[in-house]
Image 1 (spheres, helix red, strand yellow):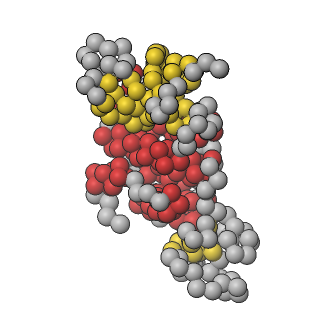
Image 2: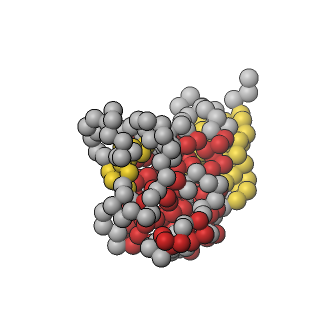
Image 3: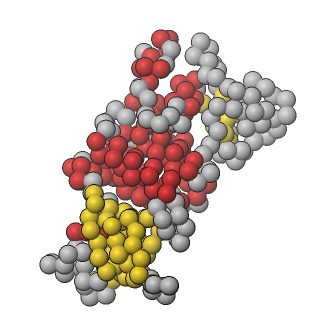
Amino acid sequence: MSRTYQTLGIVVKGMAFGESDRLVTIFSPEYGLIRAIAPGARKPKSSLRGRTELFVVNQFLLFAGKSLDRINQAETQYSYPGLGQNVCNLAAGQYLIELILALGTEASAQASLYELFTEHLRRLETEATAEDIYGHLAQALFHCLGAEGFAPQFHHCAITTQTIRPNFYDHQWRVGFSPELGGIVDLGNKEGIGPIPQMRRLTAMELSLLQQLNQAALPNPQQYLPAIARKNFRLWDWVKAENLMRHYAQRQLGKSFRAAVLLDSMWEVDF
């Protein structure tokens, strides 16, 4: 069997290696995470120099080594230049890279995760605004976690399995969220609910936004919220939704997202 192979992939990590080489991590729909040497990529005139930067999608020709593969050729298919034009969007893109590095596996096909990752990068580049960037991130987290079987449950009680709908007409209404149980908990039904650690109380607005994350596209709250709730929607509600998804993901994956902290500092978000 030939040790040379081809694959489409996006560069998600890179660092200097040796005198002029670059060690990169590629995320491929066919092979998951690939660690490979890009020979001479740090030389000014190298054809691999720009092609091994973050967010660049290439058709790669690689040689399989014992511990590290080697890039023989790379033909750029797409990049995300728009991310670099906005520091907040760039930080958001790096945040998603950290998520993929945590979810990705080596020598394993992850086509669904690859498609979701590149699609959400496209949305950050072309659709995300100051008003909804945290919403885009919350949905990206939900979609990518779901592709690997980690998505939380926001529609049914994790204990009773009963459907829970947000009650906008009672200002005191709350629903619980337990990362340990992986979903929401009906606080109105005390039967069978013992002490649950790290329970978080969600308002009707928070639950409503979280229940929309399973949609294909990010919905506009002003189009689906009932009239009584539309006037109360604020940008901060998307921030809280992303914060819940972030902490849930960090708990499930056992890692924190440094780029998310950078993004918060630019938005002066203090949780």
